[in-house]
Image: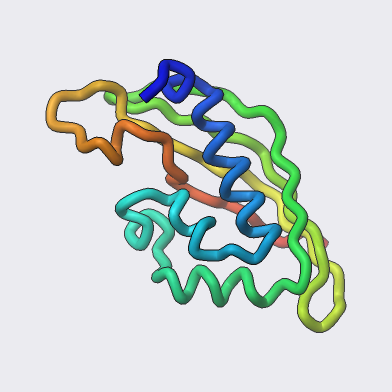
Length: 128
Protein backbone atom coordinates (compact mmCIF):
# COMPACT_ATOMS: atom_id res chain seq x y z
CA UNK A 1 0.00 0.00 0.00
CA UNK A 2 1.36 3.40 -0.89
CA UNK A 3 1.30 6.16 1.70
CA UNK A 4 -1.23 8.18 -0.32
CA UNK A 5 -3.77 5.41 0.22
CA UNK A 6 -3.64 6.11 3.96
CA UNK A 7 -4.84 9.71 3.60
CA UNK A 8 -7.76 11.34 1.93
CA UNK A 9 -6.34 10.62 -1.55
CA UNK A 10 -7.08 6.92 -1.08
CA UNK A 11 -10.58 7.67 0.22
CA UNK A 12 -11.32 9.96 -2.72
CA UNK A 13 -10.07 7.31 -5.16
CA UNK A 14 -12.57 4.75 -3.77
CA UNK A 15 -15.40 7.28 -4.00
CA UNK A 16 -14.52 8.19 -7.60
CA UNK A 17 -14.38 4.50 -8.57
CA UNK A 18 -17.77 3.88 -6.95
CA UNK A 19 -19.37 6.90 -8.62
CA UNK A 20 -17.92 6.17 -12.06
CA UNK A 21 -18.97 2.52 -11.91
CA UNK A 22 -22.56 3.51 -11.10
CA UNK A 23 -22.62 6.12 -13.85
CA UNK A 24 -21.51 3.47 -16.35
CA UNK A 25 -23.93 0.84 -15.04
CA UNK A 26 -21.11 -1.37 -13.74
CA UNK A 27 -22.96 -2.39 -10.60
CA UNK A 28 -20.60 -5.21 -9.61
CA UNK A 29 -17.64 -2.82 -9.71
CA UNK A 30 -19.55 -0.29 -7.60
CA UNK A 31 -20.51 -3.01 -5.12
CA UNK A 32 -16.88 -4.10 -4.86
CA UNK A 33 -16.01 -0.68 -3.39
CA UNK A 34 -17.84 -1.78 -0.23
CA UNK A 35 -15.00 -4.25 0.41
CA UNK A 36 -15.01 -7.85 1.64
CA UNK A 37 -18.00 -7.34 3.97
CA UNK A 38 -20.07 -5.59 1.30
CA UNK A 39 -23.36 -7.32 2.10
CA UNK A 40 -23.13 -6.57 5.82
CA UNK A 41 -22.09 -2.95 5.31
CA UNK A 42 -24.58 -2.13 2.57
CA UNK A 43 -27.36 -4.29 4.03
CA UNK A 44 -27.95 -5.52 0.46
CA UNK A 45 -26.92 -8.50 -1.56
CA UNK A 46 -25.03 -7.88 -4.81
CA UNK A 47 -28.29 -8.53 -6.71
CA UNK A 48 -30.30 -6.12 -4.53
CA UNK A 49 -27.65 -3.44 -4.99
CA UNK A 50 -27.79 -3.84 -8.77
CA UNK A 51 -31.61 -3.80 -8.75
CA UNK A 52 -31.64 -0.58 -6.72
CA UNK A 53 -29.42 1.25 -9.21
CA UNK A 54 -31.00 -0.30 -12.33
CA UNK A 55 -34.21 1.58 -11.60
CA UNK A 56 -32.43 4.68 -12.86
CA UNK A 57 -32.00 5.17 -16.60
CA UNK A 58 -29.20 7.70 -16.06
CA UNK A 59 -26.95 8.37 -13.07
CA UNK A 60 -24.66 11.36 -12.59
CA UNK A 61 -22.86 11.67 -9.26
CA UNK A 62 -21.22 14.83 -7.93
CA UNK A 63 -18.90 14.35 -4.96
CA UNK A 64 -17.71 17.26 -2.88
CA UNK A 65 -14.55 17.31 -0.80
CA UNK A 66 -15.03 15.69 2.57
CA UNK A 67 -13.22 15.45 5.85
CA UNK A 68 -11.10 12.75 7.49
CA UNK A 69 -11.73 11.91 11.12
CA UNK A 70 -10.28 9.21 13.31
CA UNK A 71 -11.97 7.12 15.98
CA UNK A 72 -11.13 3.88 17.77
CA UNK A 73 -8.34 2.77 15.44
CA UNK A 74 -10.13 3.70 12.21
CA UNK A 75 -10.13 6.63 9.82
CA UNK A 76 -13.36 7.83 8.25
CA UNK A 77 -13.81 10.11 5.25
CA UNK A 78 -17.28 11.55 4.77
CA UNK A 79 -18.15 13.44 1.58
CA UNK A 80 -21.35 15.16 0.50
CA UNK A 81 -22.83 13.62 -2.64
CA UNK A 82 -25.57 14.51 -5.11
CA UNK A 83 -27.00 11.99 -7.57
CA UNK A 84 -29.18 13.19 -10.45
CA UNK A 85 -30.62 11.67 -13.57
CA UNK A 86 -33.74 10.12 -15.01
CA UNK A 87 -35.71 7.19 -13.75
CA UNK A 88 -36.64 4.43 -16.23
CA UNK A 89 -40.02 6.19 -16.58
CA UNK A 90 -38.22 9.33 -17.80
CA UNK A 91 -39.06 11.28 -14.65
CA UNK A 92 -36.09 13.21 -13.20
CA UNK A 93 -34.80 12.41 -9.73
CA UNK A 94 -32.32 13.91 -7.26
CA UNK A 95 -30.69 12.24 -4.25
CA UNK A 96 -28.56 14.12 -1.72
CA UNK A 97 -26.61 13.04 1.33
CA UNK A 98 -23.25 11.67 2.32
CA UNK A 99 -21.03 8.75 1.48
CA UNK A 100 -18.65 7.53 4.18
CA UNK A 101 -15.54 5.47 3.55
CA UNK A 102 -13.45 3.83 6.25
CA UNK A 103 -10.14 2.11 6.77
CA UNK A 104 -8.60 0.53 9.84
CA UNK A 105 -5.39 2.17 10.95
CA UNK A 106 -2.59 -0.29 11.58
CA UNK A 107 -4.30 -2.19 14.39
CA UNK A 108 -2.93 -5.61 15.36
CA UNK A 109 -4.99 -8.34 13.74
CA UNK A 110 -6.52 -6.12 11.04
CA UNK A 111 -7.01 -7.90 7.73
CA UNK A 112 -5.55 -6.61 4.48
CA UNK A 113 -9.07 -5.64 3.38
CA UNK A 114 -9.66 -3.64 6.55
CA UNK A 115 -6.45 -1.68 5.97
CA UNK A 116 -7.78 -0.36 2.63
CA UNK A 117 -10.43 2.30 2.19
CA UNK A 118 -13.90 0.92 1.48
CA UNK A 119 -17.40 2.32 1.52
CA UNK A 120 -18.85 2.10 4.98
CA UNK A 121 -22.20 3.86 4.49
CA UNK A 122 -24.22 5.57 1.78
CA UNK A 123 -26.90 7.90 3.11
CA UNK A 124 -28.72 9.38 0.11
CA UNK A 125 -32.26 10.69 0.33
CA UNK A 126 -34.65 11.84 -2.41
CA UNK A 127 -34.98 15.61 -2.75
CA UNK A 128 -38.20 17.01 -4.17
